Length: 592
Image (cartoon, rainbow, N blue to C red; front, side, top):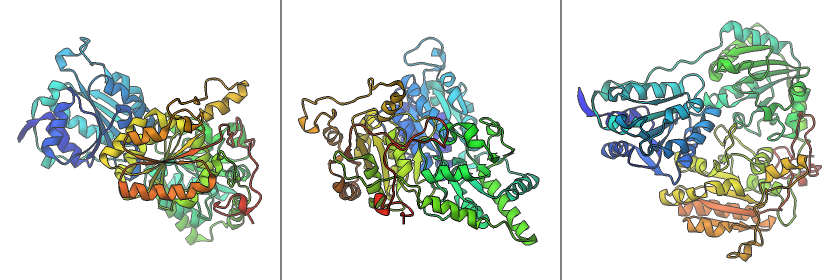
């Protein structure tokens, strides 16, 4: 048996589990682990400027490709507490990341030692497991369990806290005989699948809600096969966006109060049967449940048993991995096809496409300052089908989801439930780390951008290129819009006269100076006709210079984006809607 420090065993396990990309900051209490990483040489590391940012980088890295698990590293005390927001957002969005923190020596625990905090107790509510390892010999088993838990059932984050003396203690360990623990996932039974099929056959206007669980299961191809075999229109959720390409004839649009299409909402309201696979029935998707549910039969399939009935009681529920369910559903469809023709949903699917070709929002505005809708039109024109978009929260994300196009799984990476400001920039760095030769485009409002803006230096230092579209109205736009209900505009303006940069004309922060001071590049755009050329130039610059390139769009100060407060039948359109192809020239199906 080989004798080694516990941290050497930990690094060897990380390598064997395939988690070799780390993000974080060294410090006194975690330095032994860093020393082990240096000794072994098989680990990659990106030096963050803030540990919260490192946790978001790990999220982005995980979500960029099937099987990825990002690792976030930090020292004791505040490093662990800084990770909490990342652990919360990872858990909320079923994203496995591994957080590893240093800790004071065992003898100093509970003695108010410097930077000693019970991080396992703090992290427990937002992780699948959080543990302080108090016996060095338990380090291998703890890491094995961590990887098993991150992958088992509904994926999610784990935190391992390692006291300084536990890291350095010697143990016996044989990496050659170490094997990852086997992962099992629930699968629908044949009887359950037959029941779902019978409910489907009883309907005339079915839709399939494709949630993020389909992408987690790497089952997007199976989803498309099911949809095509049965002619069922598909409505992706925000987390499931890309599971079916936007230009697929059975893509029926997204549904909701905010991140939704006009045609998507109308199709859901016209349906009579809803099969949800790997989704949560999030409130921004459903809106008022009486409107969403009225006149429709619901089936809910999810890997997590406690999700069934959590938001509302479906007519039938199935606990199953999304991929396993789609496999079984396909088999059932082929079996029934052998007994006779399957239902013909062609007329219904054509109706859905007709809505998609007519119920559109206008994007082609020539106003100066620029209207946000024109930004997304230009992005559709400038960026290709393989582009991966990254975004988190705000009017920028909401309008992006309404107007951008996504053509494949893991090409829309969005913080869905937690929505912390500042998430976009570090998450984009994590995505671009995982996809070094692919187009990655981040989308932020000015406040989200400013939250963790220092992480641009990480992209410059580590040569992580991507394009960051910054829509700047110098406002907390989503909060300002929500304050309309209170008849106020209170502490939501970010504008001020910048004495060092009068050229920003009252928009406050001079992002160009900050971006360039952090080692990156920026293009500032004032005229809508300059948008598409600027985006194309930014792509070329990022590829050539291998650093983040920001395209800052100076927008109109006050914009209200299409949104509803109650049911999906009452979304307010604040701008005129499209009436001709020239109103929305980059729409999937141009009008007319």
